[in-house]
Image (cartoon, rainbow, N blue to C red; front, side):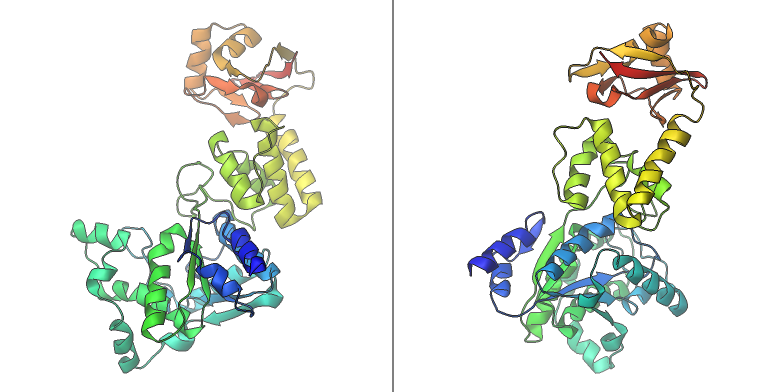
Length: 389
């Protein structure tokens, strides 16, 4: 049992929920490979780094000898799941769903071991006789379904909720019955659906699955959930240069979470924010495109983004950096012979860039480590490289 306890501690170490308590260790101590389920939403053709957080956890289960069961929701995609949205997603044709599912699966295999994956489509069992559907609907109440956060908000606001939408979480829960799921993974926004899976399994006399939810990765804005519809995503199949450049846009406050969820590491204590962000960008590009592509992407950023308009004989401006935040208007004023009020005005106008990234009126105090070696640009033609004394 000590091995099961150690495995359970490792597999749940960065999860938000592992429910019920102690159940994962019990499952792992059963002496057989577990069936670990993830439902795929085929309403979009690509996956992004937010999906990778859950896929990496599945890979950890695979590396310990367990089987991943990917459920392609070709049937439930015809219903549409709000999942925190104020309305259902648009319905797609069968051809669009099939094409998206193929692309999604191919990209998921950049993280997962295909040899230890069972791919199923829930149309295999959800295209059921009406009598079987009635049996499924008896396993939950309307009041229970309305406890789901997005349904509760819409109901309170008087926004219509169709019976078809209420069936969605029940159908997803029945997937767990059909594939004999031992563990189901998802983001924290799927917690209600995953727990409902336990209720439906119990109603059908099946062993109940363990529910494991993973944190939601913020997008490149550092605030909202990574989403293609919000435009704050990084797709795993994006060109290396785009993946590298987009990663550098994440705010410093999000870096520790990105390191933890995507690399399984702590934010390097020996690197300043600027260098840590470049290291993160390089690691991500290397993971999905290989080391040569990561090297070229870094060189491309230096050549095209930072030095696109910079003169070859760019002057240097020395700074006394001691690890403390540096007041940027003072640096701009000293480096370019401006007044501090002029420097603040140019920041407010978006006329100041640091390593090719536009700064704003709120960027007054910048970590000193971020400035060492950085290219500071004011307007279109004034540049200098900041160096530590």
